Length: 456
Image (cartoon, rainbow, N blue to C red; front, top):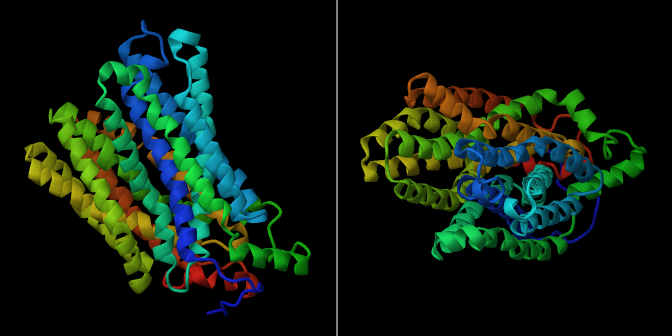
């Protein structure tokens, strides 16, 4: 293993501080994400579209505003990946955090359709696109600031803090909307729905305080040092990281996409589609299912760090593969249990599925980071993650409903599709192990990268 000594003599910053910085940003990302998704489902159709529009069309239009955010995520990954690989991780994290926060607050201040007409949904879409770009650049930087500052042998554990933002954001968003609903339907429809978006400003301020006090990743200092020595050779910062990734690492990107497919797209199958199947097809209580999903989100928050610690001990790849095997085994039983209507069994199935899915999401940060050389790492992992979100997460609920409709409303086609994607994910996760930061020879520039490989 290469020597972990870096070319810089600075005092190492606390890995816990960098992990907190990663968690703060991804929590805001997912808070805004879930807030928009919730509002699109229950209130945007009436606020931003004309009253005389058919109900179904308003609902589709409302969800379309949610979907457009996925379209520009890969662009955000490219743009901020370029900045992050050439300039530094810290600067991009500050920019993306401000973009997400400003866009969310602006959504909370938007005029309604009754006030400004068609300009209202247009402004909503524009702000959603801004969110998409910002989110596209946020995840990669959050992961790397945690992983590249982790102590040797702890990359998987500290990288998982960026992943915990999903659970934290979901719990905060659900809590805010539940609180606002206590004021009654009339108050919620007129002003209550705006409060969760405006409250994003508080989270942004906290995140900025944490992030502005950070030093950049030691990997960036080593890269810039090598750049000065080598005069632009590949050991330094790449002039166009996305071009280098697509030329030399396209297989790694593709394998990364499918390794993440169950953790992203599969997540919406066992949450959004399951909620739709349970309420529309099985006529179960919406509140009962939402409570179960909330419990599952809390479980994910609790167990993800422990599963990531396990990844540092036995290998992150083994933990992810074990989780994917669990998804394969639980896919059909989970939906079968929903059909029984037994609340206890339904909750146990939800908790079991979220437990095995937590094994996928937490360790993947370190695994993906370890698959790309340091000087193009931000761009590489961002492309994998955001393309996966565009292809799988953005269309997962719709695809699941479509597959189910082909079988007369049966649950098994989406469940089988989830099993197939998970089996592909097992093969791809094992393939990622062969792509470990192999693009550059051992130098001081990749000495810090040994942090990533240790324990992974």
